[in-house]
Length: 357
Image (cartoon, rainbow, N blue to C red; front, top):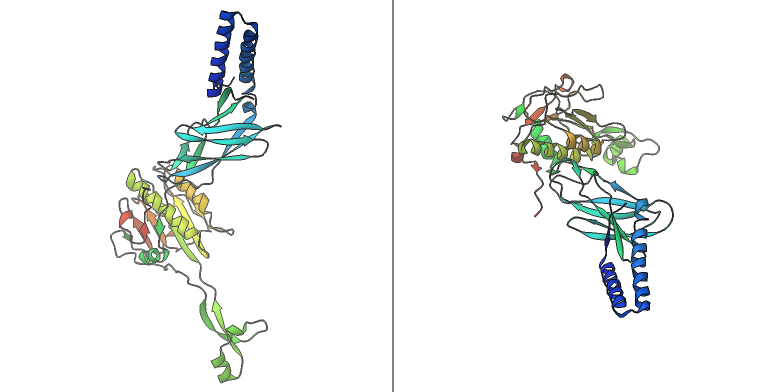
């Protein structure tokens, strides 16, 4: 049985019915008694009918992974009515204005404003779906979001990819560096000139090197190399406290900025109580999966997971944490730098996202 309450119209209706009832008894007017009884019966009929449609109402949260810790956001809620018919309803939340819906078989959308304070799972506030009877005298209410939760991702800031690449190449110069000689981080800036070759059918006229062609008498064209693939491995050793959370935000920012670029390979290793190992594949970089892993990561004694042959040996490594977990041997040999808790704010290539005013 859904809870019911009189609307403002219903309270006026009931007050009028009681006044007519009292007047009919005092004056002995049968017509007024009949009218008051009809009004009370109509009120009871409204109370019985107003909750029938709400029992068939269904609501689902559509989380688009856009929520970030400390940033106000919106959660999309879809509501529909099982079976036939149409039900005018109203969805409301504590401290939020209600939103009118015309529920039917098709989905209706409502937006809930939320204030996530930390990453991970966040339970949504209770939402009430209310519907009134035919005359709007009685309103039934149903809690539709009790226990529902959404995932809050780490806060993403600004990352200058080229400045970060130059900083990693300086491994060994600062106190945060881990001097491991090896390959450098290549930042491709398009195709590179490789040499000249004879012209072939189908070559673009724009590639013809006219000076060499005039000197040799043979049509020559410029040949370019495809840009080299950029590689980066991010290792996260979670720690507790605000400084540890700042490193998780930094990891999310790097994954977001690096993973969306073309021709880039990215690997993410997370240690702690919820270890994770994710890397780019044939279909691209699973940035969303990486952000979800960072949203769940927690401090613990577990080290980094093992890596397979698909990981890039010698790729530059960015370690975020105190360094309790050992870098897997398969990833050693390239330039590596570590950012310890409390050092994220000093990075010139990274800007943390500020709290909204």
